[in-house]
Picture 1 (cartoon, one colour):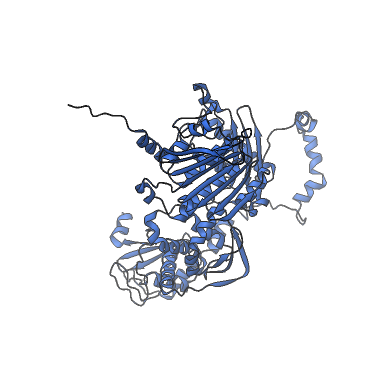
Picture 2 (cartoon, rainbow, N blue to C red; picture 1 turned 90 degrees about the horizontal axis):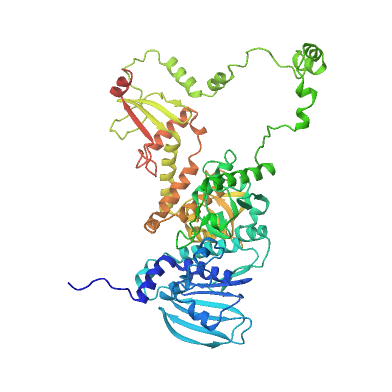
Length: 621
């Protein structure tokens, strides 16, 4: 039998490696910008065209390379940052694998121009699919410029799997934002399709956060700074009012490198416990400085996943640091149960409370003020208020009064006579006739009523959600959705990557009843909202729309309108007050069973359940 195992060619091996390192245009942007930072650049310019598919160009003013180094940089596993195995455990640079340029050159047309400060001329190299086409001297300022053209031109299948231009652009902006936040001491510029999107000079961390994420955070930043023997923590967290319903603005950096870590994220969320709503997410930009020997950044080719030597220790320190900052700036309550040693030695703390002192206290002014009747601060010594909770509950259950009144008006009604829902055909095939309402409000969130076959329990908010969804769907199909003008237009500022998503879905929002339009850089103005949406809720709705678009899969594009309408229906189904009167209860039931699909909400949850008479009897034994 002939031998079947053979070595892969260098070209194929590089293309396989490129699949790990260069997954999309944003991956190339990340690798090239990190190389510029490692080169000591103080000014980095990024130029992209067609969401990076046509051109990605990174220009820096770093130290540049010699002609030999320029050629060697495109070889696999060629790096200037690791010389021994010990260097692998004390990495502080961004790129160190020596795979980035080789992988990019395997799947794109690459042109590099570079020059060292001491050299009179620079070097120009042109590579296509790992093959060097040209190397020659050239004139260029000190630093390096790399142009990546026609990404995946020689791997059509990979190019076809790229997402829409909007999605790819947003991923590039994500990488740009992370790198710009991690290095406020470096100036950055960004051009997209020949239009300058960002220009930032070197500045403080706070100024960089505001410049990248929006001026609305400027007044909501709480500084975090904690130094320990194990790690140093610094950065900013947001006040509770800065929390949003989208996860976008949450950034962790380990030794200047952006990472994703659900465990550390949970530590920050725990620090906000009791301060924000459960469905909201806190804002934070936090930097952790730790000994490189205590963290492994060589876990994943993208270097966004790391492993810590002691996860629990990191968790504890981080949660304590965030809690301390929130308490220090009077955001969260802070109780100190320790007493100063000087206070503990005072007679009032150390000596017992004698009977003579007790007698003198009873004769004092303050004691009499709080105990004598007729005084402004007198405290009643009786049990007259112990039953306040029961009184409150009775006063807030009008349905019980309604049912009692109905029972008084129908004394001759027998137990076997059914109470039917007026003019309704139920999904079970039972036709309701004319009869007085016998609905009862249960726990403030459900309606109970009798039918021929037994009893029905309706979930109020879910029923309203189904009703609102079908109304919105009719208006969407007829393109006649109304819009309610707001008295004072609201501005809505987002990050540049979220602005790209929102710009794409603006026509759909207008068709739903929003009057929203761009208003300057990454800002939109809302002048009208769908009828029934409470004023002030428009920001939460838009946050949810952006969060939904971030996680939208390609096969969901055709169902985007339905998903948007379902989200709006959830917002409009918060009106529980409407069913406290019998008329509102009856209208809710009538509208629910007039829907084309009354049994389920748009996302598949039950709106009601039927309990047959036999089941009820079985429950009662």
